[in-house]
Length: 136
Image 1 (cartoon, rainbow, N blue to C red):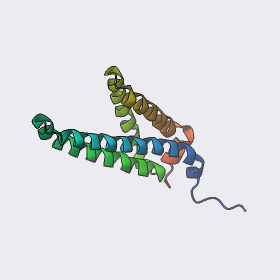
Image 2 (image 1 turned 180 degrees about the vertical axis):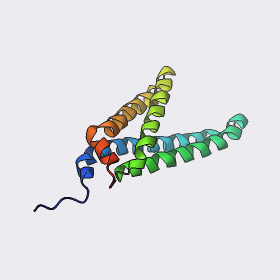
Image 3 (image 1 turned 180 degrees about the horizontal axis):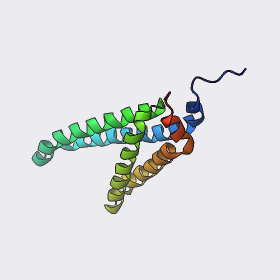
């Protein structure tokens, strides 16, 4: 009688879910870089930038925290993390296209590649099995 791993399908899906979690973590880090750049811009003294930047920065901080939380959920193979991970990647693709159209290739291309990697990791068959397992 062999012993079964307590992790079950989670162990098989770990590499692909780790790719998706790493993509989300990188996106959260990118948001943090954007936050720092926005703080620097708002400190430049432009009154219109300063007045609008505070609200925008607060929204960015909340978004970065939510993306990091979702990355953590995927890394721990939590089924609840699948939907926010997919939605994050869909929004990242839309933003990446907007950035590329605005000739911001340094931001748009990495965002697009991370979003594609994230979706591939979440939609891999082994990842779908692990995330839909009742023990996850």
